[in-house]
Image (cartoon, rainbow, N blue to C red; front, side):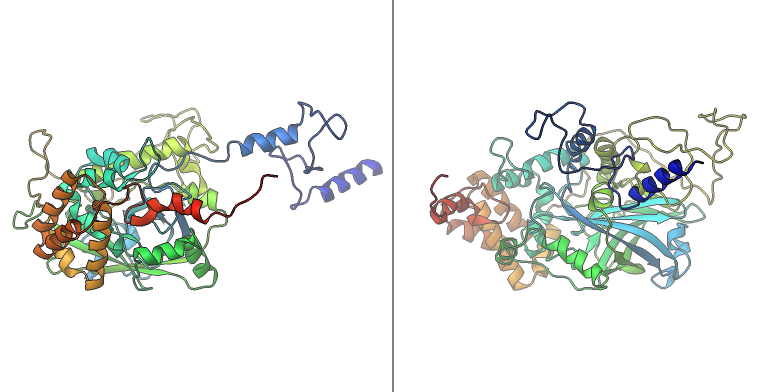
Length: 534
């Protein structure tokens, strides 16, 4: 190599270090301050490639929001299994490898979120909080997708889009409206238990670290013999539990609308790693006619005196994301993402969520969203899937004939895995119908929850309900009072009296439980400082 060429390459290598700004094509960017123009004043020319690449990517750097759970924060960590469920070997109930062998650690990524509002909404809103865990197990990904509240508003997936539409801002005004919320809930009485939780201080957790988590739905565990039990998952924070009143939440929101994200990030950054203990409730896999509720009804709690909480492991979050978008925003969860030893139950909400969750991720992130590193299994993946947008890996086996992208084949294609453990094959029999679950008492557990609340929680619940319901149609008020009376005499009386003494003096157009929010537009005018045009 001649001396001049060697010098040029050396100079190029020095200029093109790891810290050198480049285009996506790998070209070093020598001027990132000015576009190329005719003279310093312009006009610009069309061949501004650096600028066009930079700006055209910027125009596309936002992807569609999640339909629900848009606002979120996340962190990495691990799940450590106890190898037992209570005092018994966990293998008695499930063969899932993630739960075997005491002390075994499985990497996880956890995303917390609010549900109804957009990705830049405050973290002080009255709303359930999402609690989704992605386990990178040796058998592939397991997603456990749940909320902080252990029940839900509805028991049938058919109603989910209507519920979210009612809870979201009005399509005309683009303002959340409590009358729309209560119109749906009053006419969907199964929601009353969840309304009781959401309008209490439990509807505004203090932050993500100090809230419970739950799988909400009922799942199955399967052991080596193919035997099944029904199971519910519960996460209990070791940081204690804290909730906020409306006044406290508003004071926080006045200074910081990302307080929960900041709290999670800074706790991990400072080495104060948040922990949760995982408990399960176990029930035999049958209809349980002796209970006054159906175990598959996710508007109901399983009483822990009948079905005790059994510890099975702990969750520790010890690493913040390196990039919010690539890890938190692009993380994608699905209730159908289960590994061997875990299975669905016949829970109708779970069945509907299993379609919806993965479908919405394909809409948001594309057909190959499982190749994005945060969503990819930490084991070898081999499929016969082809094409699709943003595909950048070839999911083929190391010995696979590259010409064979189908199965079965004798020409070197992929082969089916061996079944480990006996497959669970429940017997299903019955007519195809469109009917609600039979045991559908909508208020008993709401009354039990009300009586369980401390006095200050009851006061906050009644105050919040009266504040919002007082601005609603009288027919909606009457239905909600009737549900409260059915749940508990005191609950109903206090709500009825509160509404009787409350004069309708405002608007229902306000964030849930935030009665005086409708005064904000006038206050902004009154408090605004005069200014002259410039």
